[in-house]
Image (cartoon, rainbow, N blue to C red; front, side, top):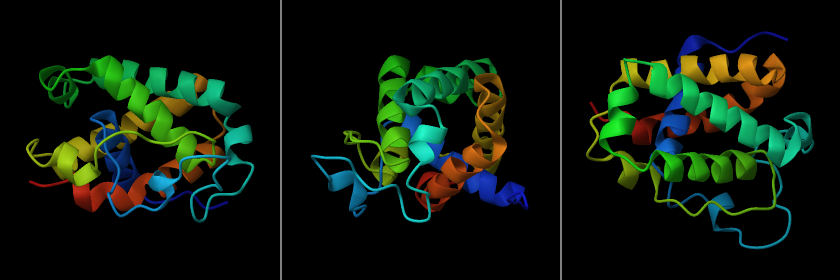
Length: 163
């Protein structure tokens, strides 16, 4: 399997960064689902959540992601300044589970709304993507499964990078 490009990874991590501050695009129909098991995000295999280790695997991965984000001097000030890190972690767990086809619903703000005032740069976005891959390694998430999640999150980059 050919690995995705760094730019694609950066775009994907933008979503992660956005989710960290509590957001999903308002027009995203997946986010509007309220009951039952949602199908996996478009392009994501139906068994992705299971391959990720279920909700427990998502929880471990998000915990690891925030460990790396909060230790990363390129971006930790954004997360610390805008506070509510525990809430950001909870929203990321909802979002990533939903994207992978889990039964939950994402309850955060849109990506645009959550990032409008943050002035996120491409460099900061890329830093979150790098941290996402470090989290995959730490959580022992297989590379191809990690790529599926990050690729699904990639389209949110344009709503997150504003500077």
